[in-house]
Every structure is written in structure tokens, then in C-alpha cells.
Amino acid sequence: MPTMSQEAVKVQPMYSRSAMTLEEIRQAMSECPPNHENLTGGWASINDFQSNLGLVGVAPPPSTPVIHPATDTLPEMLKARFYYWAMPPAGMSAHPNYNPQSSRRLAAIDVMITQVDSSHIGMLFSTRTQQVLRKRDGVVASLQTIL
Image (cartoon, rainbow, N blue to C red):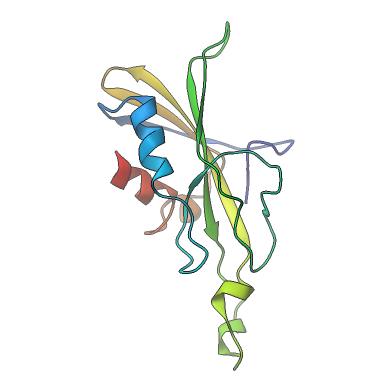
């Protein structure tokens, strides 16, 4: 559950073709929020206030990704957090009263996106763990759908 607000974060850079602007990507992400009812991962802001990260059986507060303007040292940047619910500990689903919505821990991966040129974007993911990045319903799959 690495996020950019932690003291030390190992990031995974990626580069992709996309004719979409940062605003178009932000809008598409906003239309795919996390859904606790069916445990579908989705996009929100990277705001840590009441994010519920690491808690069991909860959803993140509603929010949307944000575009930060360029500064003297940084380009314009789309900052988004992909929330998902981690699998429960092994064997938990075998319990007779098992309820996925109340037993999965909320986790997230932060993504920073910049426009490299009119047809390419650069991305930083707040994890280098390929197993987490490449889940079939995870952050990279969601971005592939959006882009």
C-alpha cells in the first residue's frame, strides 16, 4: 500500500502513447471511482485526509484526481490514487460468516502523470511490485482501459 505521502517510496516509471490531454485523463478517471459494494478498484485524489488507507471493511471518501499546475521545477502533473481492496488473509474466506466487504483491507497506489508531448505521457507509480501493478483488475489495467 505505498503512497507518495510516505517518507520513502520506491517508484516505477512508465511511458505510454496517448493523444489524451491530462484533463481528458482526469475526467475519465473521475468516471471510475472505487466501489466498495462490489470491491472494484477505482480512481480518487491523493488526499490523505480521512483516506481510510489500511483499514478493513471501509471505502475511501469520495474525491477526484487533481491536476497541479507547472512550477519552476516541475511540469503540469495529474495526481491520482488508485484504491483497491487487498485480498484477505489465507483461509479467511473459508469461515462460515465471511463477508468480503467487511474483511478486506483498503489499499492504494498513487500515480503521477505528465504530458511529455502531444502523443506521449510519462507516469510514476508508487510501487515497483509487478504483481501489484499487473493485476488484471489493477492500476495498469484501469489505465489501459482509460487510455
